[in-house]
Image 1 (cartoon, helix red, strand yellow):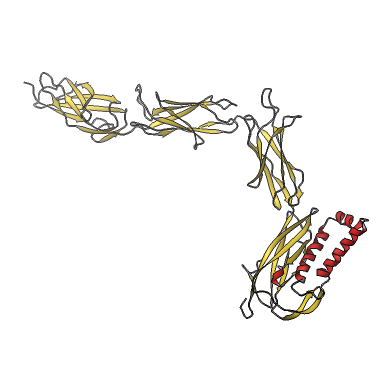
Image 2 (cartoon, one colour):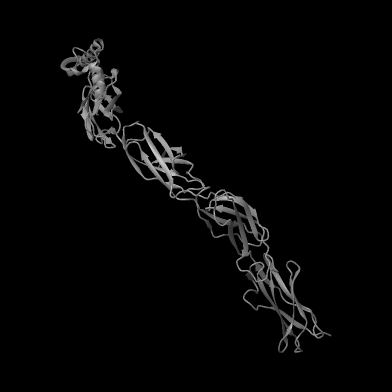
Length: 511
């Protein structure tokens, strides 16, 4: 009768043992010790290692007879256990002296294996109109020599980390994406992201750099004028020129559109037109909308299949203009005035783009509001401040006001405002035009012009101090006054208006 033996699954290496974790398809060392139970000779035969969780044989090893009563079976197994928890036992076959025996189970946990993804491109350098073929290779992070590995899943290919170029399935450890159109005038950074599968973890490749292969060029921006008035047309011209003479068969003149910027604001774009006399190209933009002040203009050429993307030089253009804005001393909202009294406000006038010529300032009162608004000074060279005194009237109030003849106070302020604007238009008219009007031989036209000035003068220019009685008074409530500043900017009359809101309070109220 066969004698009894003792069987134990030994913990021989640090890669296997009770409760240890390994990666799938990695190398696992399994070892079993067979011990005689009664001091007899060392056992012989074989040991079969079995995964009882999935009811499958893992490996079989022959016993090596040791000294004394113990024999050992040891075997290295690669890729035998799939992802998950496994119970592994050693089954001794027995021999002429000993009966078969089984060991206690050992738990081995298999997690997903780490992977390494690499990406390559064919052709390895960008070329005009040549699409790329991108290939990702998947491999274990720690591969055993001579072992075949199987990967499933997909690979996403990205440009510059954000733009998805396409997706390809993994087969035979490879994923290939063909016919990828990549512009050769800009650089690209290609990455491949492996999705992983039931046995393998996801991984992303090191970026593959594909450098731009376009030719250098220069971008020069010019303007037809260095200074302009508001609304004056400026012609901006961009010339894009190759840095060296193009080779025969290559593109001779740069193509595409040029984008024009005022600081960070796009002001327009224009197509390049080949210069028939050389290898440069020209784009032209006419603009009339540049804001007043020092405008910093530049152009951006995005390049094409043969030439680099480049920025032009910075061009500073002075657009002459002026601004009128409330002074800091003004009330934040309405100017409160008690009926029968006056109030004051101020507006600051500043030049833009180097403008410092004289600016005329007038204040117009709505006809129904029966108040006056006087300006001091009426002509300002920026920077400067214009002050305004607004006079209101009580019913039956008698006072000295500037009127024309015996007109009532509510009428002359309107005439004065109109007069000031009319005279301002005449004064701001370019000198040559005034001269032509005043020197024409047509007597009727001269007489009409003189009568107009005389009438306007009587209405507002030749005002006198007259004492009169205001019968109705200034209406209570809100009135809006229009303040206009006008100037001759590069032989063009430019006007800007702002508004002053006056709140007329009842007598006795607190302003």
